[in-house]
Image (cartoon, rainbow, N blue to C red; front, side, top):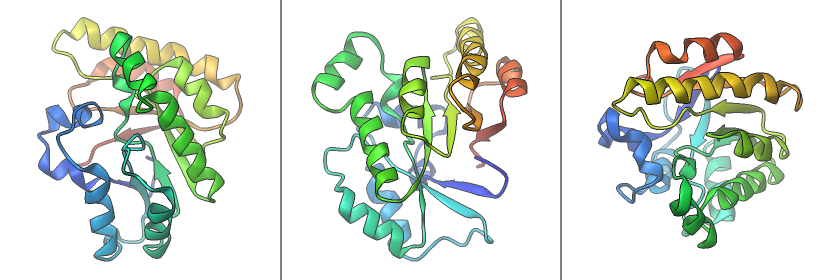
Length: 204
């Protein structure tokens, strides 16, 4: 996330690297239960590094008060919308939104965490969602290039879109902009990373 920060996402231990980004769009794991179970067992030993809780914010069973109490008890003061539902697009995305389980819900819940006094780290996979996230003043905005598709040209196009977003978002304020490198992306993201303020990645 940033030097010294760790995104706590214990669900990843059970998911093959190539499938991790799909957790936000398929019901293959109880992401929030995994995170909260780790925190209830005691804050993870991260050698003094700051912990950011990765939460699936569109989970219909997520109760804000319960989660904020659990995070506070564990000494965790930051939340990220990871995994994100934003990797769904087109008609499917509209169906999710109409059911209250889409991007609008994700943004609203992240904003609610900020209003509750938590630092928020916002993942955004499109220019529209990035702009919407910035309206709620996250501490950092992490630009997500999407799924690492087998065709390198698709990955290159996604990476270029991220690179083009960065100067546009610079005009929206001074929120630090990071680029997320999912499993399967390589040098395609180099241009975007050079324009950004930092890099986020999965450290296995």
